[in-house]
Each structure stands twice: as C-alpha cells, then as structure tokens.
Length: 278
Ligand code: PAF
Image (cartoon, rainbow, N blue to C red; front, side):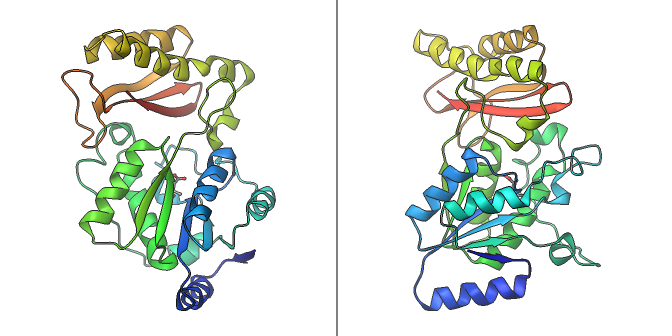
C-alpha cells in the first residue's frame, strides 16, 4: 500500500495503472475509518483492480460554526485498517495541495443542495461537490463508492456526474449499523454515553415508519410528526424529518414504495443523520 500526499505523484501512479488496463476504484473519505468505510472499500475492490482511498477533511464543506477543527482524525489507525483491506493507495493531501493560494473555483448542483440538510448547512454541498469533482479529476476513477447514510450527497453527486458528463460509475454502499441500529459515523465519537444510548431512537423511529407503512400508514405528515415526537421524547433536537421521493428528493403527498424518510437530529452538539427507503 502506498501513502501519497502529492497530486502529481498520484496522477503518475494512476496513469501507469490505466495503461496496464486496471479498473480504478475510488472511495473518498474524511478519515476516522470505521466499518461503514471498510464496507465501501470492499465494494470497490470487488469491482476494480486498483483501489484508491482518499483521506481529506475538506474545509469548504464545513460551515463557519461547524466541527472542522474538532472532526476526529487518526491517520495511523486509518492506515492500518485500510492496509488490512488491501487498499492500493491512500491519498492524503494537505489543504494547500488541494486549495492553493488564489483558489477560486466552486461547483454547485442547484436546488438539490438547498433542501433537507442544505437548509441548515447552506454551503455544505457546494463544498462536497467541489472536492469530489477535484478528486475525480485527480484519481480518474472508473468507479467511485459512496455510503447511503449520506443519501442526499449521493443524489447530488449522481446529478453532477450526469450534468458534467463525467466518466465515472457511482456505486452506493449500504448503511452499516452498530448492533443496536445506530448508523456508523465518525461523528458518533462525539456522543456522551447517555446521548449514545438515546441516539438509538433514530433507527427505531425509521423501523417504526417502515412497519407503519406496511400496516397501511400513507400520510407523510402523520409519519414525520410521530417520528418527531419519538425523537423529542428521547431528548433529540430534530433538525428535520422529511418524507421525499428517493430520486427527486421532492416531498411526497402519500407514502409509497420508493419514499425516502430522511432525518437530521442533534444530540447535544452532535448532528446525526439517517434515512430509510420504504
Ligand atoms: O462523505 C464524506 O465523507 C465526504 O462528504 C466526502 C464525500 C469524502 C467529501 O469530502
């Protein structure tokens, strides 16, 4: 496994591999690797011959009051975990390498980036699409794997790939959960023991809505209000709970197959997201 910090070095490695005919698989991450990331790496490995994982905590996707500085980092551990999975290259550029002085270009997928998480994080997705496009240009992957927990992100990236005619296949990996159902996230480490116990309500409320749908619930307002109540009772501060179409992310009039229930909730200062498709 090679550890690369320079764009020019990575480009040379990739061009060599491409000449050999290797399919390049790519998993972009912000590090603090957990089982969720590792399952994306396994998906990438199955579909490619050469796997690149980037570890870069991307400043533009954090708002001024968000957790860029506090975001958990443990490069040594990340490297060990990724080596075990047979990753070929870790790309870990500095901020300066990615955003040198005088940097001015940002990419935005209109509309989709201003709803759901984009309401309270208005510049977040612009930061995400900018870094993802830059990483695609650097890594030139044939396939790139993203996690389903960040569902809105996957829809926005697919839209960017389509709109900008990028030659990369986007693969979405499943949500990996802790034993009690909490979706794995690097941010889970922020939770106190008490918050961690309470946070299970996110998964439970999503399971509830899935079952309620099976039993005949069709009213999205009733569904989201009930979820809201369940979460509030457990001390979560709901940022949003919405029932939307899984492809367009537009609100639905009736719950139906393919409806996405997405939510963002604060426990203390920690903002967690989760979703389910019914
Ligand atoms: O999902 C993430 O970890 C990040 O948003 C990504 C895609 C690595 C871009 O920084």
